[in-house]
Length: 385
Image (tube, rainbow, N blue to C red):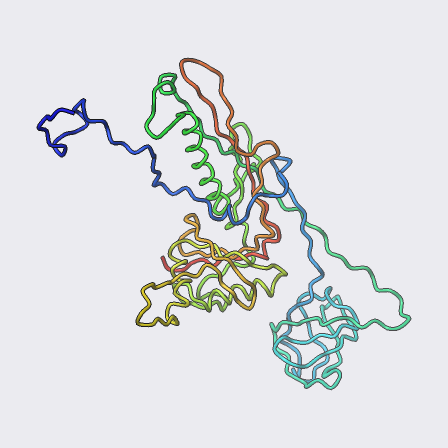
């Protein structure tokens, strides 16, 4: 090659003899990961209708509350009013959660919701009744040779959610398909991948935060059908700092996390195995162990990461998701959650009719979330941002 006298640092892409130096790679900085969907995995079955329903059932309740402030001596009185008299049978052994005394139910007055009991049954220590105290039914003792009691049962309930259509249009001109692209072999395929990333991101966001319409949620030609997400589904176990005896710390603490896990465990047979948080609450969870770390003089790596939290109420994987609202923590039993497509409507590309010198189509999918037994999950909310 002959000497030109030009310095390479003064040359640019405008000079015809210098080739462009453009990396054959397209970098994407916009967040598009879906950690919750990845943690839940694919559903074992699809939805079969745009109105998706499932059945739930419960066992007969074994707890109640004292609803009586007019009894005489709280230590010796043998009758008192309860909130749900239909939960009891003659022969039940019962006790208050806060005392060691066991009582035996000997008569039930359904008209006045009053129980008649034998106090200090079996030599248990007599204790004072208190209005509002939790009554726990230990179990019933049937008489030998006695006639059968009236049958008792619970009614199954039908739960509902709706499928939501996620769609994005792709359009590439004939010229764009023909020219050689930097970092892209096929512009149409590249646009399909980009739109799919966006729709998966939106699906996770709607699975967490989406809401169904208040009126005509099944949708119509003029009303969009939207799915109900995890946050609005969870109503039984919503924990707000400073309310209902929940610890009042403004930022997430280990005491709060364990209090919430304990209440979910007490109110259901759910097994919380996912703690889903955004960046702020993830840093708070990492901070649970930071003060207890010890490092030697030769250690050069500082680790402050908690990816799994093991408590008395289960082992939980900590999942970091951008789409969880700031100041909130989702406590989920993943075995009771399915994100499912409508049958034959998982994400796919559908070409549109040719109307000119271009290729066009839609990336489209239709999904819903089935969240079973919402009282097996929980949400901590109202933490300081």
